[in-house]
Image (cartoon, rainbow, N blue to C red; front, side, top):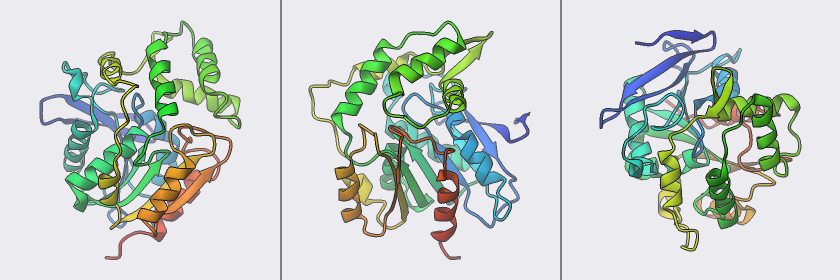
Length: 299
């Protein structure tokens, strides 16, 4: 049962194959069949709120609006937590995404994956390539820069619960200010509200602590895995890669190598932002809209 919670979206929920209730946000009318629906997958500890601005833009576009489904992985946002932290991995999250598409009635989709979401997209290209028609990778590629991963892992392990929203805002500015040099005060405030959830007026982290266990289990001294075989599964579909100029997780060298593997891939460089660019900011919504329109498969 879905209830109206916001003029822009409905709550969406479905049962995973192992019995968890997983959730997200559904934007736009189910009657819109002339454009592919867009499925949005967030970063490692992030959730569906990250895509609200972009989803509103795409689902209310005056010319060609489309449905958008933004998902909370298991253990994030409003989705149930998994008692087994080992299930917090891209393979399980890809399977959950397939189940979500089936529950939503989507046979073919355009997929936008930020960071972890992009890895899930590459795994999907290996598991169920037929469902993917267009893919946008936001600040992620088949090779992950160890410097950025070490920063993220250390930051999450040291992350404390802020006592006020002002403190939450300052925490984010302190951690990310060097990467995001062009954000407004409102951008930072929006980022804080997408990062934490409100519990009686106090911000609290919006993901299962078991996710931190899965992160700690990864040894920084070991070589990070690469996803080139999975990435090559995207060569048969329209692909757009977005990179923040200040990103320490997705290098320019990896982006150039991706162009060699996928010659028709398009790319966007976002000035003044790091990992990962805010998709509702600047010209990105319109650029994403144009990519979806111009590369749509012919019926």
